Image (spheres, rainbow, N blue to C red):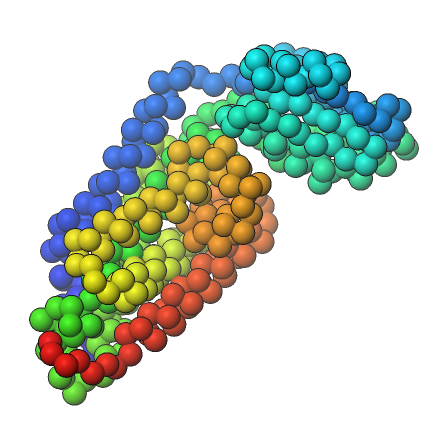
Length: 380
């Protein structure tokens, strides 16, 4: 087993194309994204977002609580919203003409949001709505008992949103721009799925000469596969660490102070990525290695896209439209684990994300083992 581990490790190092796709490709894309955000200049906050407010339940507790929120968000030089009270007919007309970003509809028991399209402003409105719903009971209680404390409660809500503070790439918690760039580290890890495809083909006797020789060997498949998988996971984790070093020390992103936890996340993510590649290689039978690499690259990029690679607002849209897709996406799990280390004091999100990744890896490996179990071939 040690010899198998050694030769697999050396073979991976000598495979230059894998090194390019696992390291250079995501780093180049991340660098271009960084340059694109940097070219926007220093970010000093958002221009107030024009939004209509249609109140269908005047003088209700919900209306009073939401009005308190709007007053805070529309106050001062760092105002986020520019709310305009109007009728539903007027609001629909302005929304269709693009004069406002959305419509807040305040009913007796809920606040809903109507949008005509998707974008950064719409994403912020959606985030405000989500946070208001979460803080709704708290704000209503405070408004009834001690109205002067409402601004402080709303400020706590906005600290979670983290959208009314100056963004400085590389300092403090990751913001929208930094999150988008961080996803390319996730891409670095999940490009390792190509290792898994190769392992899968190398143990299917009708797919490669090497696999045919292994099929007549007295050595059990599992004894040959385990050390090679370990070598692949270790090497892909090393690629992830190289990407991490680049994003930290060259681009200046902050992943927190507990780098050992970041590396652990990269290790678990690499295991999940390689197991996903094994499953694809075992399930897709009539496609050669080049075709499988293309399929897997497309799947990997799609997963990272859904996780927010091209915009955190798209991730928010996916979470609202298809929350189950957001929850089971392994790229999203790894992104959440990395993001939580730089943005939150507790480890609940980190632990939940890593457990989810580990369960996903076990599922992928289990199905791969079923598909790769001993078979008889008429001709190889």
